[in-house]
Length: 490
Image 1: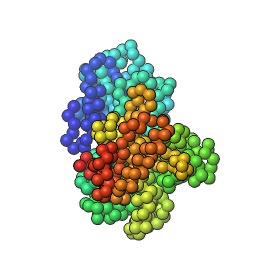
Image 2: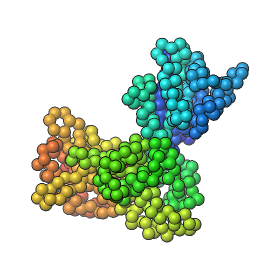
Image 3: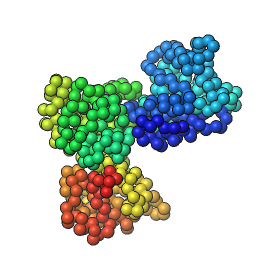
Image 4: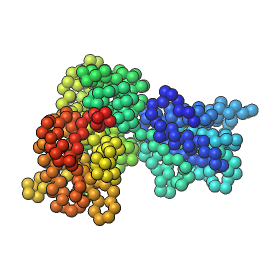
């Protein structure tokens, strides 16, 4: 299939869809496509149907009977049969779309499938029966049925455990947000410092630029503050309420106030389960369920401490939600008043740097280390990149490690390839390198990891002084990573 010229990137996703859709093997097959809202799943699947002459149906929240009527009408408009379709049940409807692949491989997309399945919980079982191995309607068809959904908790269960469709899918594709490098290119930002600040606000969600901000991108660093005021803090733009809608659109989040409070706790710096519970005034056991639900929905991410077992920390997975809880939610009433955005933003700038930009920079550094860094520079291919706390018995303090790189275990203890520190606004010097050396010495005593070749990483958004550069040049085991390097422009 030829990818539309106007589609940005998505090379991997388009290639995967192309291989699945054009597979000439006999028999109807099933694929599942999922991803958070606004990532471009509908655009991607609709383009695939247009390119391959397939059928696309977008479900809406409706009763089962209404959805079946809409499906009948949509298929009638697509295939133009002698008489209009009036399906009595979904079994007839599924067999009808399987017949679309009678002559050639044909994509058939049911978008927002969770809406249909909630109205008719038997629908996954109906599809399972329709795709039964020796069933004639399946073997005589080369339809490529694609079920798509944005409700991550539902889509995560559709092929798991004892679910009816487990083991039936030949494609499981997750459409993710653009990483920080692709997001900068998409927003047409060449300044790495500006790109990271924008990424800390809106992340890598494509729709936020084209539809929500109407292609309004900050022109330079001086324009960043004004851009925040005229877009995400502007009650007249869709970005203003988007974070609230993202939570409301998740079907499993029924007690919205509780989930909002959990996210607010994390945005306020309470990253542990105990810290979240204390913020909410509840016991730690009482918040296990909402945390698990937010994780399943893809809104909260659990990070294990690389150096201490059973000490996970939590972070908000969507930058816009973190920005909302840290900056907007505490002063929502003020922001709703016309003309108040500038005043609120000036007063919130410091909080933005400490609660939003700093943690986001650290996560970008970990992502870069895992996905972009040269393995030779790290001393090996990373198996896991995280962060953690290293205890110092002499001073009875804990040293925070922002980036910890664990390699692939070949024999004995796993290798600790590197440890690193990330500072957004600090010009890093030799003292930062000395601190990492001390932490490495502490880790050597624990004997949990093989630290024989552990390297030291310094990430800075403000750069490095001459002493740091001299130390790194002389040592040979120190890597200095600035913003241009993070964005592949070194």
